[in-house]
Amino acid sequence: MTAVMTTILAAMLFAGCGSETKNAVDTGVAEELTILAAASLTDVCNEIKTEYEAAHPNVTLHFSYGASGALQTQIEEGAPADLFFSAATKHMTALNDEGLMDLDSIVKLLENKVVLIVPEGSDKDITSFEDVATDKVGMIGLGEPGSVPVGQYSEEIFTSLGILDTVKTKANYGSDVRTVLSWVETGAVDCGVVYATDAYAGENIQIVCEAPVGSCKQVIYPVGIVKASEHADAAAEFLAYLQTDHTMQKFEGYGFSAAE
Image (tube, rainbow, N blue to C red; front, side):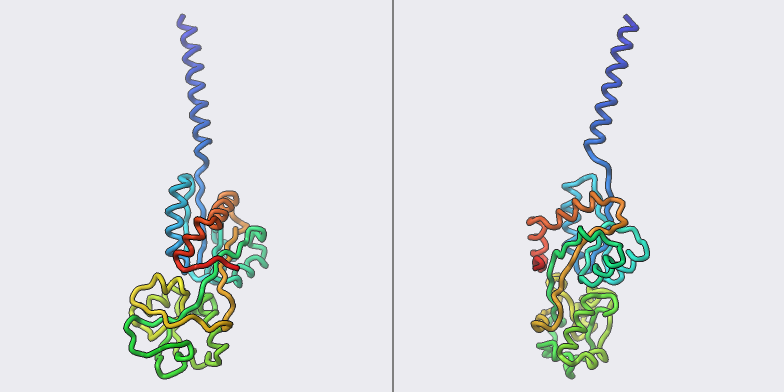
């Protein structure tokens, strides 16, 4: 009788172990994704992170925000990254040409606008980009054109207006668009050039106007999977999520529009 009971108990324990193993597999393997994203995506992506992790408890999203050019350099230098979300096609194209991106994964996802902003209550009577070249402006905040896409767009705008050289004598350059926004918020500069989405998120600022039509290229935000990613399947699933109607509505709520 003892031998029979021992056999039954052993079988039950074996079955129980098998059940636990199956449940562990069903819950999935924990995945951690690193997404290098333009600073102008900070607010909306933080919200997306919270929502996505709640719906995918086995996935942790690590966003690292900064100037797109600086993030490009990080990828080129081998920093761990699964996805790159740029504020300009220039940096994505460069990485792809270097063989560092999964070409088939790259999507032109969003469009933004470039705007001129001033501190709330400003008495400078700044009403246009052209005014930056006048005595109305003593200092303007701009993104560093070598690494910050909004800085590159700014130079295109002022070049098209024929006033870039004058503007440069008044420019204070920031390491990313959020730095420029903070300068205007605190009144450290008379005006600044940022994205419309940053202006909507800013405090104590006023939007003067959008960049003149045709004065700069479309502000397109591409996103794609880094070829060296060790979590390509999870990265592809998150990339697909970014393209859903639900998530696109979230982007639109922050002032972005779908890229055309």
